[in-house]
Amino acid sequence: MKLSVIIFVLCSSLLFLSNTHDISPVSKNTETKPLNNNFEVKEADQLLLGAFSVSLSVKDLGVSKVFYENLGFAILGGSMEAKYLIMKNESALIGLFQGMFEGNILTFNPGWDENGKNLENFTDIREIQNQLLKKGTIPSSQIEAKTSGPASIIISDPDGNKIFLDQHR
Image (cartoon, rainbow, N blue to C red; front, side, top):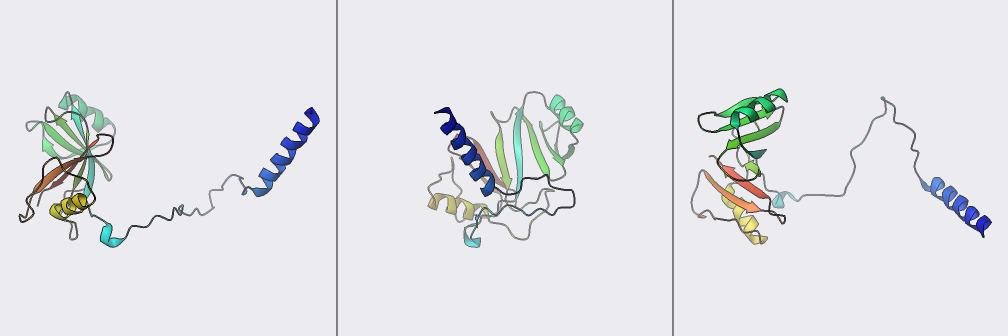
């Protein structure tokens, strides 16, 4: 009995090894290719949401400011007096907000890039809202469809995480 188990394990191991790819270490000169996950977004379905940031509810704006500066973030906008700061490190954006909301929020700014500059092409927030409604996602408050300019909506993902879409132009 023991011999048959050993033979089975050895045969299985040989079969496994014969079907695997070379797993030798990759040299520094080896070119890597991105994974192909067969995921394709149809242009008509793609909503251009603009700059992405994480909006953090902080207890002490001054303490949080120093912490994120120590991580290499610099102030991009806001002020201590206004009780919020937008901080940037390369393309990463973090909004620090004291006393404005509970919990943390994922934020998108249609019409802006990560430097707060206007984007030539973007999906207007009203069109984003329209597409979300068609797909069954209901914002907590809705924008009047015939308006234009700055507006915002908040949606929640299936786990209750808040997503704030805030168009400034």
